[in-house]
Image: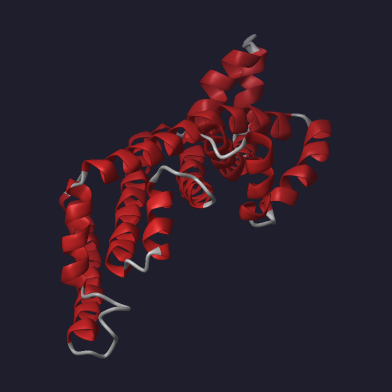
Length: 257
């Protein structure tokens, strides 16, 4: 990494911090000057104090750990399942024509409308939350995989077949190196839908998870805790996003050219 790249990255981080500081300053000003009722909008500093108390609370950390585990479990299930279907859709014209309309239908609708069906079938359980997370995520993985497969140069596949490569060898030695960077971009997008799906499922009658706590704080009109909980979820989402972005940088140079 050269000096120019490092300087550009530092400038980008500094710009983001400045924007966060401006938003926090306006938030603090509105609360402290009475422009907004403090009962409706506690100050930024008060909210950060509540956030600190939440992070220090073992019960909140347990709920947060449960939500994170559900998100990761749903993602671990979605990636191989979605990748397998995506390869089938991209490689087989018949199954591609059959499955694509079925994939577009749920992708074009808000996933939350299907949640009552999951509750009726699976109850308000860990299985229900993870299943809904998978449902919210897998279609993004399928379409990302299909797009990545279609971006592989046909000549590479032809050469591999002419050398006697098996189907699994073509997938592992041609498709994976070519598609992994693009697939990771899809995974990063899918992570957002995954986290959103898990939170919605936790808000719908669950008794555990950070989504349940946010609903509880909202129902009891604990605005400070509610805003702090929203910030906590935002930080978790940023951590997930940056972790996958780091993998993108690691594998970015692996793409076959």
